[in-house]
Image (cartoon, rainbow, N blue to C red):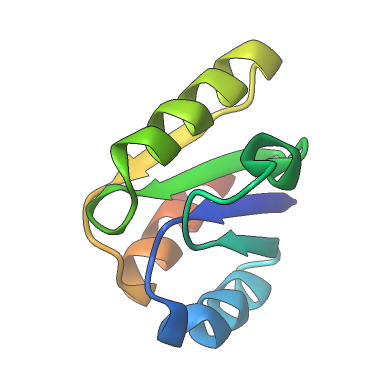
Length: 93
């Protein structure tokens, strides 16, 4: 399963990737709204947005992208590694 993570803390990126790998997923991390943001999201199996560490504009673009391609999107307020693990576990179940 391929998952795109939007938001979170830059310093936790290696831990996010390791947690996803343990959960059997590959993870692409996008920490902020950048040029060609929707192109960087791509076409993953799911999108996870850490809402407390991302701009409103990036959240809006992610929602539009997910809706237009019928990609499941999960909004999580906290940005901890355990939150990512719980979301991935719920996605698999």
